[in-house]
Length: 115
Length: 114
Image: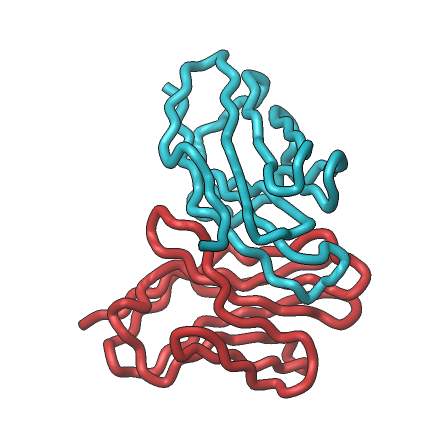
């Protein structure tokens, strides 16, 4: 099966803790993205990467960090600096990042709750 | 500023009736337009896209969308709604010259009543 996997599906975190969300794709896509989804706010871009060992901040990068050491993996760390991290996090990928007409493929999401 | 608007937060339609979910956009340059669907607690699924050519685009699950350049719209349609079509629908646009990220609408919740 080709696709994007995210783990875990549900994640609970205590205030002050860093947590890392996993995203893996076997589609051989160049580009990968992290979005945050809150009710009524649509999707907001956190970070994206067009190539291994390179990534750029999106619209709401503060309090988050990423790495892209392998083409198939793009983990997201939610740090204690993120003031309101409770949300649904979606990872996506697309082929040929420079092709504007390529659609993005999404993983099933991780729901993070801060206790 | 580049933007996408989905003017209706919620759309209700009876099963078997035609449905329309509206999307308008504002971008400079030629737009690339996309529709996605999201079922509860799931990721987004791609439905269809407009790149160029025929203004009527057909996609997955019987959905289609019509690109209207003069009205800057890309409404999603289906001739006969199913209860299983009930979900959250997102419109997104990327324009020529900015291939890095999509501009997303806030979503429209579609409820199909039996």
